[in-house]
Length: 425
Image (spheres, rainbow, N blue to C red):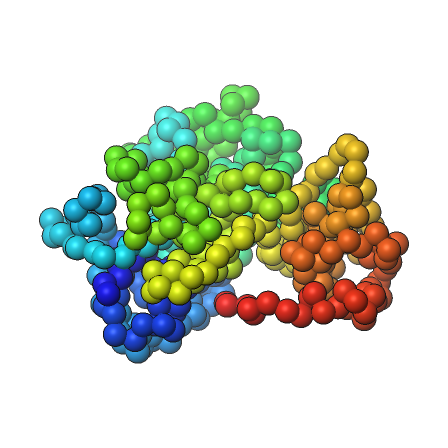
C-alpha cells in the first residue's frame, strides 16, 4: 500500500505513527513546503524571544523519518490534487501518484488586504520560518517598535515575544477586549492588567486601516479612528482559517473546512483529511466547525492513519480547549465560555488580590464550559468531567472548593476519568 501525506505537523505525525503500528512495509511519502523536520509550533514564541534553542523545537527524534521508513519531500509544495487520477501536482513540476492520501495542511493566517500590506516589515506569526524572518528583519533594521494586529492567542503570544526582546509593543484588537473568543470579560480583564503592567499598549474596538511606509519599509499605521502610531514592523495575529485552497477546484467537499466522516475520510474514497484543515463536530455547541487545537490534530491524524491502514477507528468529535501561559499567568479555557437561558447554571470564583478567576458553566447538570486564570490546578479533572458528560448535580456545590480533587468525586464517577486510549502527545 502507498500512503501519501500532505503536511508535516501534528496530524501528519499522528497518521504516520498509526500506519506504522499496523503496516510496517507500506510506502509512506510526506510532502511539506516547510524545510524543517517535525517541530512544535506552539514553541515559536519562545524561539523568537531567544528563550529556547533550536534543538528544543523538535518533539520527535532526529532519526524519526528513517526509523519509520518515511520518504520525505520537504520544501516541496503541492500545487493541485487530482482525485480521479489519484495524483498530486507539485510546484516543482513533478507528479506524485497515491493510493491513500491524507490532507493535513493546517490553516492559513488571516491577512486583511489593507493598504500597505505588502511593505517590508509586515509579517504573519505561524511558522518557524515566520519567526526566523522576523528575527533577521529586526536585526538588520534595528527595530524598536511593533504593532500587533489581533488580541487573540496568536497576537498576544507574539506581543509577549516582542516584549521579551525589549521592543515597544502595541496590540490593536477589533473587539471590546482581548481574548474575546477564548475568555469572558472578567478573565480578559485580568490578562489585560498584566499586559499593561508589562508595558504593552492595548487598543480595543479599533483596527488598522492603513500601513504607512518609507523606502518600501513600514514606518507606522493609521487606525480606523484616524489615530497614527509610529512603528517599524507590523505583525498580523488575527487568527487562522482552514487552508482549503488545494480542494477548491476538486470534487472534495468543503465548507468552512474540508468535510470528513467519523473515519476522517472525505467524500472521495481513500482520501482523508485531519487537523486544522477540517471541520468536525463540536459536541458541546452541537455544530460542525473547525477546531484548531494541537492534540485534536494529532488524534484526528491517528484516526485517519488507522483507517488508511485498514484498521477501523472512529472520531467522535471534540470541543474547544486552550491552555496557554500569558506573561506568567497560566490560563485554561474549555468548551463554552458564555451561556444564558434555561438549563444553564454558572459557578464563579474571583480573587482580585491573587488575580485568579475560575468559572464553570453547567447545562442540565453537566459541565459544558470552564475558564481558569491564575490557578489552573485540577483543570484536567474538570475537562474529564466535560468529556465524559458526567452529571455533577449531586456534587456541584464543591466543584470550586480549593480542596476539590479526584478524591472529592463520588466513587461511582471516578472510573469514568481514568479510562480511554491515553494521551498521544
